[in-house]
Amino acid sequence: MQETRLRDHICLLAKSMFDRGLTGGSTGNISARTEDGGLLVSPTGTSFGRLDPERLSRFDARGVLVSGDQPTKEMPLHSAFYDTRSTAGAVVHLHACHSVALSMTPDVDADNFLPPLTPYAIMKLGRVKLLPFFMPGDQAMGDAVRGLAGKRSAVMLANHGPVVAGKDVEAACNAIEELEDTARLAMMMRGINTRMLSDADVQALVTKFDVEWDD
Image (cartoon, rainbow, N blue to C red; front, top):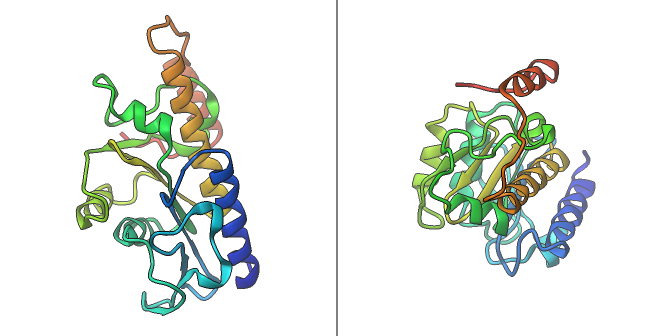
C-alpha cells in the first residue's frame, strides 16, 4: 500500500477501535510495514482517537527513526514480532477490558488463553499465549515474544493487554478485535455450563483453514 494511504489507514482503524472502546485514553499502539521495508508506528503518549498521519514515527529498513514523533515505548514488543515472524506486516496492542479481565482469572490456560467458543478466534489467531506481567516498556516483553520463535501470531500480556501480528494492518486489527470479542464471551459465560467446540471441531477448523496450531 502506498505510504500516504497506509498512514491514513492506520489512523482510521485506530480511531475506529478507540471510538468503540477497545482501548482508551493514550493506551495502545500500532505499527505497519511500509513498501520499502521500514515501519510506521504510533508515537508515544498518543490517543488512538486522535492520531495524526503526518506525525507517525517513521523508521527506515535499518530500524533508524527518520521522521515523525518519538515512537511508543513498546517498540521492543513490536520489533520482536517483526524479527521472528516473516509474515508480519503489522502489529497492534490494545488495553482491551475483557481480555485483560480474563487474563486475571486463576484458571486460564496460559498456553491456550482463549477457550474454544467460536470458530473465528481459532481461524484468525490460532493459539494465544498468555505471558506473565511485565512493566510497560520492559525489554523483557520483547524477549518473551522472541522466546516463542515466531510460533504465535498473538499473545496476551497478563494484567495489561493483547498483542497481535497480522499480514497487514487490517488483518491485525480484525484479529485483535476477535480476541477481545472471544474474551468478552468467555467472561459472560463464566459460571454457566457452556457448550464449547469439541477437540474434533477445533482440529477440523485447523485443517480446513490451515491454521497455525503448534503444541
